Length: 383
Image (cartoon, rainbow, N blue to C red):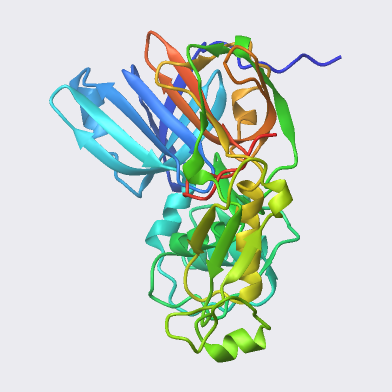
């Protein structure tokens, strides 16, 4: 019978700088005063390491680190927990700070040179194509580690992604408003649909939390009717072709026929009508706008969203029943909290993992919701 997974205590933390692709190993970063990193859903994660200046040879080797040339690798108890490309090195009289971003950062510095047409494609396939094109000329060993989770979500754009209009990451971020989810683990970029992982990693209870927690009901994230704008939805021909009906349609000045997503009046509980206007970017058609609106309304229709965050200083207990590398943004975590004015019994989605370690202590924190809040989308209600 196998042992039960648990977070455990920090026994050892090791930091290495390597060349691109993880080789060769150039140096160890010894005696770090502080290590911080995170993992995020639909966003680029970051890490920083502060190293006191301890001698001429150490200082001399730190002077060799170059952004975009080198990678930072962080190991906890012998297991690699974070990997990314170094983007900044700050040299002071008493310390050196190395800053890095995860492998998605390479998409920020790749500019699409050709238009890219999207017609009725799996949204994860579109994301894969964006990444492959971005890395085709120079791949820092990412394509072979790309993990694509197929979905049933298709997407079409009324206009192609334009050339020289932004970065490859901008294109990926546009898809996140239409139902794409993405994150990283080590070298791997993971892309998929709104339900990126159909897996629950464990049960989080009150006794797993060391410190305070904050459960928030945020009315600013709630809607029970969503209007989603799409390309040419203010043109009579478009509205007629789509069979749109409504109170006010073109050719009246200022009118439009956006996609409408809503829940029935009978299902709105005590809430009155709460409408939101969603603009997910230029170039989408009606079916994709409808899909995006439906995702938002599913997220914030039945109840005002509940979110869970760890304030500074709060951390997970070593007895928490999952390992650190199981905490991948997009995974589901069952929550059972009874020590608050509001009891929470819900499956929530992991949004962000935060990590901080000093020679004296280790803090691992979480942010949980039922929908991705980091990019500004509506949140989902916990049942």
